[in-house]
Image (cartoon, rainbow, N blue to C red; front, top):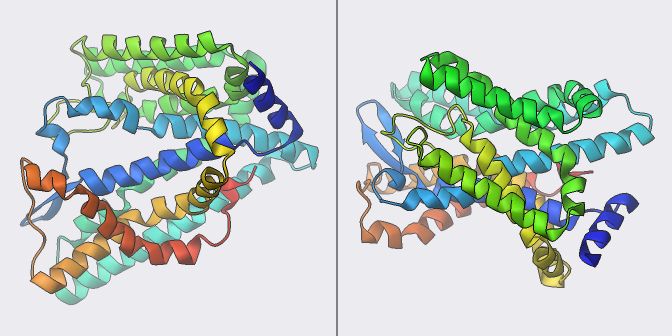
Length: 372
């Protein structure tokens, strides 16, 4: 209980919450490593198409309950935005200026990256007549969808703050109900297009839940455990209902994805992950006070956003080098065999080496999004 009191006192005194920094940076890094390690590119006449070992390895989908961490990222992002807004209010900053600064900090680097890649694809197609380069560029830029949703939530921050002040926890219940209603209309009555509303509803719920971060920290440990088990049982119930797939990421060949667009299952995943990080909090906070862990935390926070932005660029550069050396794209083993699994450390190390120059170039200063 004293550890919780310490965490609350740090929040009140304006000290940085090292655990928040850790959760935010590690969630981005998990996404990056997942893309590097578990993306299988198959090459056809129309260019590359991605697939995943999840479609070929029975039971592997259970790992996505821990490794699909975008709900956690949006949750922590909501807490950081509320904290930053409270401090901006103390300095006399208006909500419009606050929101615009946040949007600009994220949109400009993402937009520049997209423009460079689109221009590169257009030039390659024009000069060499490689028509499938457009498909490759789309794959490189596809992870930026998450930045787009995040920017929408930042733009909606004035509304979300008002809802939080006016309705408190009720807004979470209403958003959860809205997400479930969208699933019913989509999956029971066939209104497929309405499912995309959940891109804002589900991720907005995760972001709004972050406004209650300090209350979660203050809860007794038994309620943290209860939150974890509530989310876990909800996941099992929804997945084994036969309506939703077990994987928390899209699997090629599945009739339904829990992510594109997100389903109500992601709400259960959020509850499970929030409970899990609170159960782990005491141990992690002790570790993060150690010098080596503190240095690690500061380092990964310094490079996490540039790593996310440029990790697919690093993959593309590695592929280009391989193509130049061998005269063709790398082979893809489907289904993946034992050698493919043994090569996973190399599948991470190679793109990382090609991404390091971008980290050194753009990771020297803390990004505005990492400031409180």
